[in-house]
Amino acid sequence: MAPHATAAAAIGGKVEKATDRFHVMDFHHVEFWCADAASAAARFSFGLGVPLAAQSDLSTGNTAHASRLLSARSGSLSFLFTAPYTPHVADSATTASLPSFSADAARRFTGTHGGLAVRAVAVRVADAAEAFVASVDAGARPACAPTDLGHGFGFAEVELAGDSVLRFVSYPDGTDVSFLPGFQDVASAGGAPDFGLTRFDHVDVNIPELAPVAANVAGFTGFHKFWEFTADDVCPEESGVNGVVIANNSENVLLSILEPVLGTKLRSHVETFLDHHGGPGIQHLAMTSHDILGALRKIRARSSMGGFELLPPPPASYYDGVRQRAGDVLSEEQIKECQELGVRVDRGYDDGVVLQVFTKPAGDRPTLLLEFIQRIGCMVKDENQQEYQRGGCGGFAKGNVSELIKDIEDNNNKTIDALASQA
Image (cartoon, rainbow, N blue to C red; front, side, top):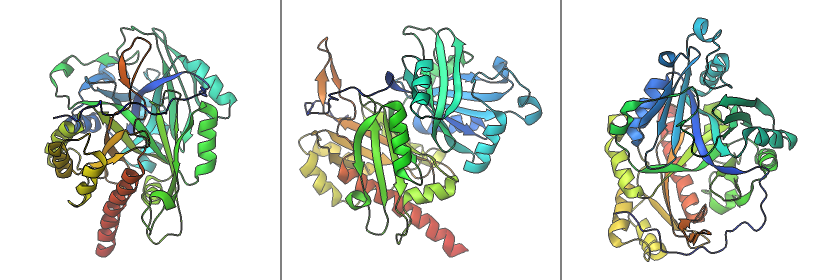
């Protein structure tokens, strides 16, 4: 039974003055650079119920890299996994379907960050070349100059944090190209299960020093400040992080940027990420669902078979507070399901209700995490009187953020303590 999404009308939240330097429509995809694209994609497809949709590899004439695309049938959520071919084949290849791909850079990337890390956060824009020029003019460092991919597709990149990039993709409405030119659709995708994950809600960037990076990214995109917090607001007493969330005009593209507070008794999860990732990068990806409880049941059922393991649930007493905060939106049955699945529940400044849960680290290192989120409420109507949910409904509810940080750090500290005791 999915939580209903009509409990609250939008209160505020509308951007009074558009600040974006170029038109940003939505997240388009997230690309991982990895050691083996087929195995990484297979795990995410199995564990998250996101079917294989397209590929570009030796079978399509691409001798530079193997890429596998997973795309949810229930929404726009898309993961791209890319791995370089062997040096004597890939280094001289001119057949890469991604114009920014470098086999040598991909090998260095996986050597530093491990076999699975996010290289690119891609957003759909009205014009990739225009977005690139506007960004660079406002201080962004170029990563890939604008490229015409054919069929009306534009492609460009600027640096985001460390060696991760912000990718701009543009294309005409109604195109018959399902992803990007150079990728071949996979005909068997229709029979694969889909767990109901719909789109990326936000992407979390971890960096050593917040102020210059946040100012730079907000400056070259024009994104406005959506939310900010300090360690005193949300963190356990023995660790600390500071953060800011920036958003595009419609607030459906959210970038969370966090820094560690150093010198605390315990290492924050951001400090742990930076150490084990080998520098700044993407720490977690948040995915939405219209029925988070149903999706999580399917994800949990596969966790012991090669999928993703959810963080342990909070104590039962936590859900007494949930009944007080959100008992008018969630039924008693749904609250019990949240308790069973370990879902955190809070209410935001705009009366939106936010349901969230994290996985344990997705790979060998305590770096990449996956988050599942459902936002309830904040329903508004467009000019055609069609109802939709306002972007970022419920915001980043303080109670949830505080509890989730504690959950992540408790898991990290148990792992690190266990390793230390065996040394």
